[in-house]
Length: 576
Image 1 (cartoon, rainbow, N blue to C red):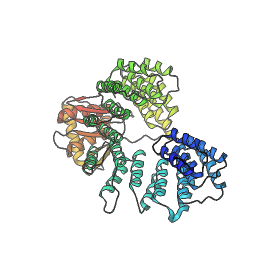
Image 2: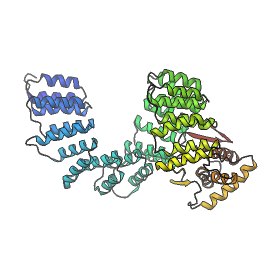
Image 3: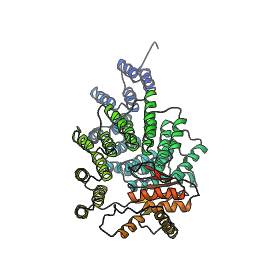
Image 4: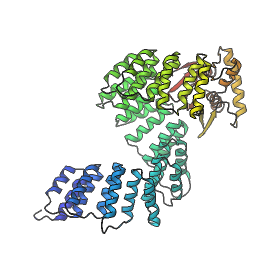
């Protein structure tokens, strides 16, 4: 151009920024003979929208130092950069500057940006004051920001209250709620809300990839394969396209629902795979005890030029542990440049499985950082398997210091004492729990049937088919005893007669869940049971026997791994 002015210079800066060429945008900006507030805003926006918040904040400082007065657009850009930083002290200082500025119109856009900044910096009370002050000027974005803030803070009730009050919900509103429920451990609510989104009458926005990814994640956490398959069918029917991230969530869902074959199928069908794709399937194979396949997949990952990361090594070490691959695990652990606490926990678990408890203890002693709960938990479980009360006490006291309110640690130590017949020590642990106000968590199991979750606790008689369940359980118990099964009451934390112990373990939640599944499923159909705790010895033995007597594959997911029971054998090889 033979003649350039501030408008053409600014347009050039804006163009470079929009295509992400910030170096060219900045060279052009620095070469400008004259600048306007709009010019500064163009460069600020380029930095902010491309994820360079620190550069945007430094440029804002230069702008003020050069004597330019920021306008409303400037403040919206800078406040958005501060929100992305999530720094509460920076947010407070920026808010003070804004309120000292003259001639600023606190319009809806500026107030929404302020609300978002306060929300992302954890200042919920300040965010809510702005939200309420907006009154009828609130738009959909404002509502979504406030709902998202409540979800991030874990205040699900306040988020739902606002969501229900919204008159005009867009897909972001629904996604925020569904993802928020899934990320806050309320997966059942996430699935229920998705069903409302697609089935309720009236004008509702169509689900997109973000919706489906959250639903797949929720189904994975719940282990609801039926609902997951229904969601996949909905996705295909409505032609919702998935990116690599969406396919990764599908791999996660199928792995967590006990259908590792489907997870592998999705992985093979993907055109593009990233580190998360490989990590998801490696972790899935690990949970299912398929260590060799996980090792092969990691080799393929390297061949594709994707470097293993922290998550990869956690997954592959877990795979080695669950697969009993001690030497391979040692070799892989030595390859990690700076092992984290998680990697040490996996290695301790691997050594414990192999019975190398002294080596596991030595490894903990030489750790360069303070062990976290996972490290001591791995050692404590190994002591349970190998009946090592001496090391168990050391591991348990380490856990009590780190997690004084985690009832599972106390119960596991009590189990070890009970197995050794040390009832005075069992009572001592129980007294410690009472003194510290620690309540034993309730163990429960659940089965999916016709889109609903059927939950059971030990001795549960609340289910509508209770009489059928207990009748089948009694019949199975007689058949199991004739085949050589003997109840193992070693996990009962009371010194009672053998008959009472058998009765206590005989009505554990996983047995009730298996019986219910046998009643409602078709002959030969695989049974899937989920449990929130580690499956006990007796239930593990009983389910192995049931799988042989009934000729069924029974898949049990506990809080540690999957157990595939087929013909009286388990994929875990009796170590979990």
